[in-house]
Length: 247
Image (cartoon, rainbow, N blue to C red; front, side, top):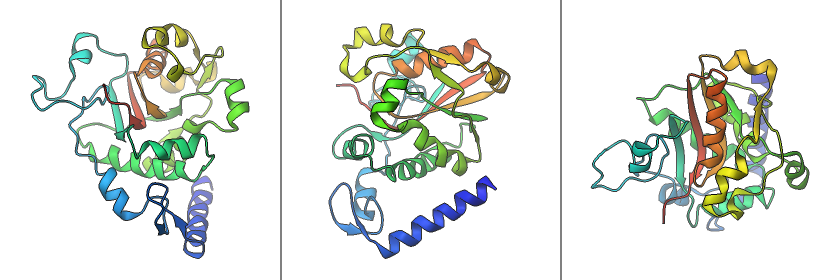
């Protein structure tokens, strides 16, 4: 039944889109999709060589073709990161329109792009379970939705992977990571997450996928991977729409 409801919802949205053409979020051109085919081809055909662990773009002269220097010297707790694009103009406008413009339909677009990015990585196995990065109660009230969860819902259907929305919880409110100096971000999220006691057996020995919209320094995702592995997860992969490159 859930799969049938999801299929009917997709068909409904497609029918509405044909009747009510929208404009491309990036260029404003009238089209039937949120991003027109031209912008999709120009900005989201990512052929960047990336670190398999943190997804930071690798320079062509890198001594290791698969890992960046930071992950080689101090390996993060997560094992793999899948991204669609870099968090740069103009693709960052999609994130802003989604999170702060409340254009929730963009979540489905992100999920489709993440599915395609995940399926291109044939050498990496799909995760066994999916969970979103949780929002604190106050942030959820202010925003009205968890942006990571709204991406995870359609991504779960696309990949055929079970989604557990309440697997992780915020044990305390934290400041927005983007507002903090990099040196303060670790302290901000340290011990900020807990695992639902009923979900511990679900992750023991499993490959867990964590969904988020943007990965900046990876501090939040690293903290989440740490607690997932502490409770028995065998592998943790991040499914993130955009990655902030190093400057």
